[in-house]
Image (tube, rainbow, N blue to C red; front, side, top):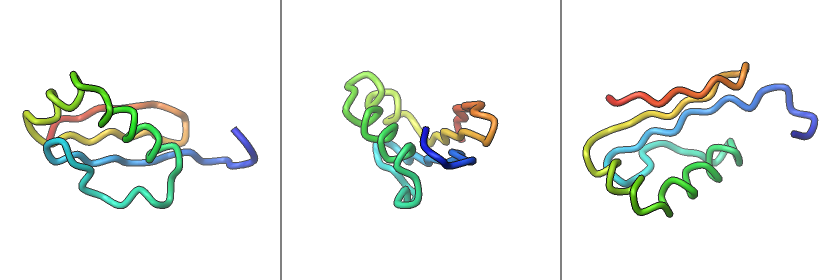
Length: 65
């Protein structure tokens, strides 16, 4: 985990595309790449807009917008 104290991030998907800038979080970029390279996840994302959020306490939320 390194020396960082906060690994929180938000990933916004609009269809199968990332809609926000992930340049500030390697964890978010890596997760987005894993999701986008999975056939079933890409199919699910085609159905709408989603937000994946992890807070500073490592609680992960997946929300459909």
